[in-house]
Length: 113
Image (tube, rainbow, N blue to C red; front, side, top):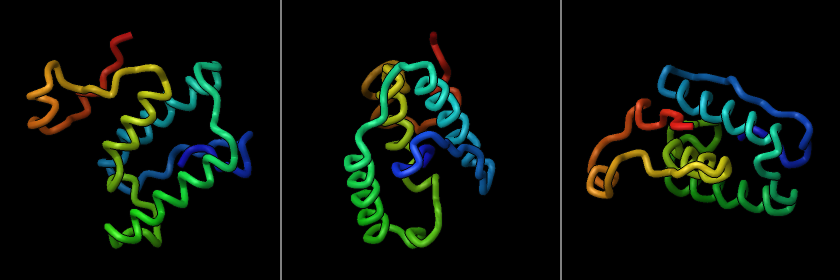
């Protein structure tokens, strides 16, 4: 959602529908900064297009938002993937019980570096 596979030298961060999407945009900015610093490289165009098509199929089956952008629907998984790309742990809680049963908040995503 940040770098279009067919336009790899342009990034987009900033469309915020509501306050609940603010966190995802902040994480996307951190992800983009890591990409620009060379912390990781983008996958191939074919892999990105394939992943997008898989996500669109899941959205068509599971949500009414597939015809328009809806960041919050896949926010947790999307944030985990961005954290892994940046070399950070996607675990937000101190132990697995909290990770499994506690709700997430913005404080769970603080940068420990």
